[in-house]
Amino acid sequence: MDVVVTGAAGFVGSCLSRRLLAEGHRVFGLDLLIDRYDPSHFERRLRDLRGHPGFRFVRGDLCDPEALRAVFALGAPKAVVHLAALASVRASLADPPAYGRVNMMGTMNVLEAARAHGVTHVVVASSGSVYGADTPVPFSESAAADRPLSPYGASKRAMELAAWSYAHSFGMDVTVLRLFNVYGPYGRPDMMPFQWSVAIDQGRSLTLYAGGRLKRDWTFVEDTVDGIVAALGKPGGYRLYNLGRGEPVENLRFVRTLERLLGKTAHAVEAPAPATEQTQTWADIGRARAELGFEPKVSVEEGLERFVAWLRDEGLVGV
Ligand SMILES: NC(=O)c1ccc[n+]([C@@H]2O[C@H](COP(=O)([O-])OP(=O)(O)OC[C@H]3O[C@@H](n4cnc5c(N)ncnc54)[C@H](O)[C@@H]3O)[C@@H](O)[C@H]2O)c1
Image 1 (spheres, rainbow, N blue to C red):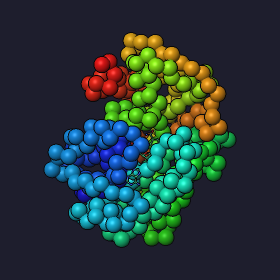
Image 2: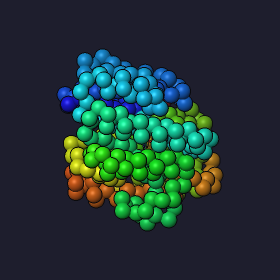
Image 3: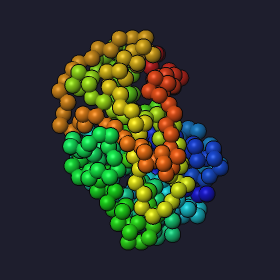
């Protein structure tokens, strides 16, 4: 099958693209390669993809319908996995309108391009950040999710509503996946696992909010990719799933594990958690388990071991 993957040069998008190619699909990737971090990360992620005969790539902006037309015209895509976005809760505070433009309007452009090209299934990446401080844990898809704590969370929730309207109005199959705290090889340098690892390795201080007591539902990227692939194979009107590990881990335990793997001590500076930080993220994955057969396999200890091994292989730590 031909699949359009937006955000193909991103963390999750590049891992998904490799998986789809390995399974014999053709992947048409779109990515703007935004200038929020060192471009070497994009090059590293695209390295193996570019040489694959089933991979085509367009550098372009979600906000430009022409760029979308160009990527859809590369073949006969049957499905889209829409991962391109402005990510990061913290960064969204600096420029909320950009998050509305890219995450909400950009998603409507993708939905519209899919409709125009007769693509029958659109899988859209949302986030556990749509859940608010008052959402009971574990977070269930049936919770209201109408009080996101950050502009990022709000842009993702708005995007979900646009997705629902396309499924409803045009009879498209649209699957929304709320991803939770993904980490692993090819990870984003602006995310905690990467930043903490490099800080520990270089003997620099790292910030731990609320004494490290915040909990995150850390999910190894291969498990996330398993869930996306499973969702891709199960179109059916509008569907909504949490994709996490379902086991929140205190950030302090996460950092202690990194210390052990890197053989160095963290210089942690404590700070109060900003109002945008969820006290914990915890996905109820019962629906994904029952309907998609989703079963996360990689523990945080094993996932971090594989992540640190990758950081070493790439010369990002231990040099
Ligand atoms: N990584 C996580 O923990 C996590 C958690 C929840 C949700 N998500 C969601 O999953 C998706 C993938 O996340 P990721 O961690 O791989 O992020 P990422 O930043 O690595 O990937 C996103 C990609 O989108 C591209 N992009 C940004 N703006 C664009 C635009 N206007 N046009 C075209 N491309 C553009 C970027 O260049 C980047 O390569 C995102 O939608 C994100 O919001 C991720």
